[in-house]
Image (tube, rainbow over all chains, first blue to last red; front, side):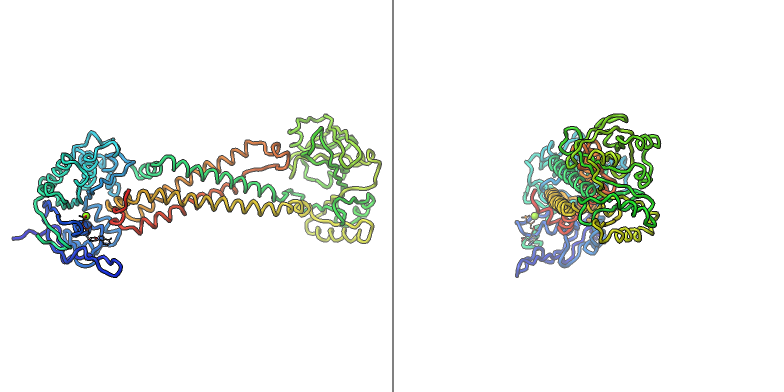
Length: 226
Length: 381
Ligand SMILES: Nc1ncnc2c1ncn2[C@@H]1O[C@H](COP(=O)(O)OP(=O)(O)OP(=O)(O)O)[C@@H](O)[C@H]1O
Ligand SMILES: [Mg+2]
């Protein structure tokens, strides 16, 4: 008996109009992802990995098809409802760490919580817990430029986690890191899926990184091939 | 962290740029307030309770042509005329000044006090002045400026009159349109200048505002076809005729002000859009995290409004303080009297600052709104 998937992608297509020709970034992709899975998206450059990730995370709109997350068709939400949905359900980690340079580590982590109704004390507790999870309690007051790349990426993970989202999406999170830092980051992502039962979806080119996942999907020319 | 704290940190992230934007707004608004105050100074209509009830009668040919003394008996008889005084410009120089900052007029003291009924002086001083033919009444501003006291001697060198005056200050007045002028006995001038039998102008007080037009017509008709036909006008329009000489300057100053405001707009708008463009990627992240367009617009607006408001407070407040503390009358040699930065001027400049803050937020907000999260993430730092 198949468990009801938490993310269900149905016949998802994304077509870009480039001058006269259509660029098919994603071609009728269907896939189901269960809670607690650590899915790794692999494939050559331009195969549509980022596009799929963006569509699942609700920061891009499909040309056709559906993304259902816990039964909600993400593509049907309007701009502002979608923003709120992302705030509650998705944590983002990017290749370049994308922290706000004028905010300290703790403040960066706190950012998504400003949109919630939590009191400032509750926010501080959540931030402390998230920083503790990525092992950066000591660095809470540091600015991004006072942190190493690996530490910055761990702050970004803490920011992705602090709202306790359903999904964590990561686009080449180790692309800019040395192998030691990369291992730290991957270990954290792995433990999120194993211990906290979060659904993690990660794009990577690196087979060593892919080995941390529980399942691999290979894309080629906008289609899942394995 | 609070939202306000976040906005402040963003606004100050590039200290030098924040300083420059605040500074350029401040300097421009200082300039704008100064220019607006100058325009106001040059076009200020004389406000006086009695001004609308007074007529100035001058020679129809020009203000420089005198009028014969004997006209006074006819003027006195015209119905509606309450009082008439000769009013002759002496134009002397005080001490060794090349340009004297106060005018001096020869008047008939008794008639004068009947024409200028708004009592701005003490009864005793007026009486002492009336008694002393060589006495004079000096405006409070002039008294203060040259450190004069009642009882002092005031020496004036004639410029176009072939005589000098040696007057004793018998009294002072305060609260008129222009508290600088010196008034003295016409008789004294007549004696010294060899009794020319003429006056510069007549100043007339009319019974009521309703009869002013009729009295004006009567006066003009009475002396029509005589050797000295006259032109009577209200004190206000008489003074405005001097002011209108400044009309062109007003236009000039106003165009300078518009250029200042326009340049300021360009500078602030481009600074703000630069500040936001640098942060496109971060704003895309904020959107991904769940901040909506209107929240991002609020951030940008608050930042640009905050910078413009700070610049405004410094510039406008600075101008009010600066011109308030400075003795403009002294520095301008009496050319500018009040140079007062009035609340109305400050309010208008504040509106400019506020509009500036809002306008410069619009462009960046639109481009942020039009950029999707994915596009924003692709922009390079
Ligand atoms: N805004 C766009 N306009 C036109 N084509 C686009 C746009 N964004 C992506 N594409 C195209 O869609 C295809 C898939 O892009 P995508 O970014 O998903 O690839 P990817 O698998 O993430 O590649 P990489 O490993 O290089 O990041 C590519 O062919 C790309 O050129
Ligand atoms: Mg990609």
